[in-house]
Image (cartoon, rainbow, N blue to C red; front, side, top):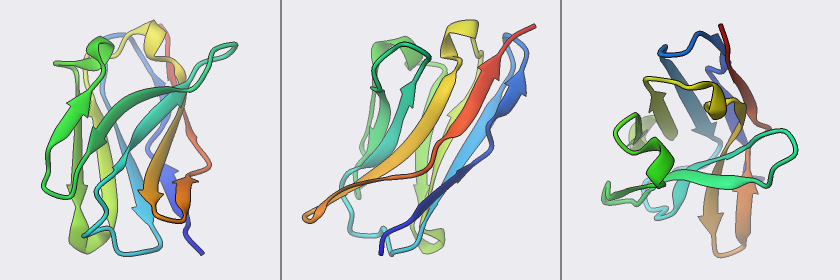
Amino acid sequence: QVQLVESGGGLVQPGGSLRLSCVASIRIFSIDALGWYRQAPGKERELVASITHSGRTNYVDFVKGRFTISRDNPKNTVYLQMNSLKPEDTAVYYCYLNLPAGTYWGQGTQVTVSS
């Protein structure tokens, strides 16, 4: 069974930084679709960033230049480094991976940006 466990969320002031981690229970080396979504209260879940097995990254416009996604295949871990955080970044952040059998999600980690 595929399990994804996120960590690293918390409360941070505007302008601050957080690093989210997502550890998978399977080897991620060959998985081409990994990434992060987020869901703010009252809003739909939205893509934040993704990374392929070759390391090619994709970001949505509202995080470009502030967030960085990376992967450590030997550790089966995907990271999301978030800098210059804004109150509108407040949300539950979910990591995901796509397999032929379907899409798997972590349980989510809360990120709150507030002074």
